[in-house]
Image 1 (tube, rainbow, N blue to C red):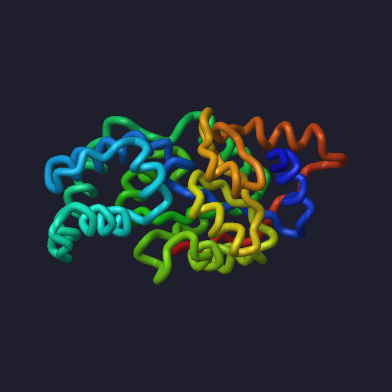
Image 2 (spheres, rainbow, N blue to C red; image 1 turned 180 degrees about the vertical axis):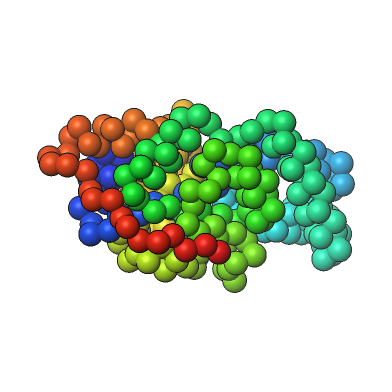
Length: 249
């Protein structure tokens, strides 16, 4: 495994650098919120006392629908109606939580603002539902920064399939090799690499062995220090700002 600085240097050597963020657990520090919501739903409606290890090994990195389908297949009646009902309940609970407990950290806001000031276009690629993402972004100071937001509804194949990443690259008008992806899950890292992109895992203080095995580099959290450290050790000036218009989805 290399260092995050090494990966950033490789990325900055491309012609037109851009950045893609995963949402849950990466841009939005909301995995504790999601675990609380899913564990309560599964315990109450499926009789499954899901543990943190269950969540990390079986569910992390899947789309919301895939998570609930997996839980219903294992512990429920296995019907589409049950999946739809739990999806609706999860969406309602999430909106209520993030309304009072905003999950984007100040250090992440600083990094996004730094990249934006450098003219680097950014997108989000996530297995979350669009309503969840918008519930967070609409109340965030960085909510209007992202040129594209790819959610569960936009793709036929979720991570680790590269479809979402490649779609975002097209909307950013970049080649996959121009893109640096920040991810927090094994499926996400695999999807980014399958798309031919640079990738840094946001692993927290105790990264799993599975994530450590696939990530080209890891950091404990997102911070503008990543950019500043790379600039200190990179000869010459930072890359020129992009004047490309920012498409929307």
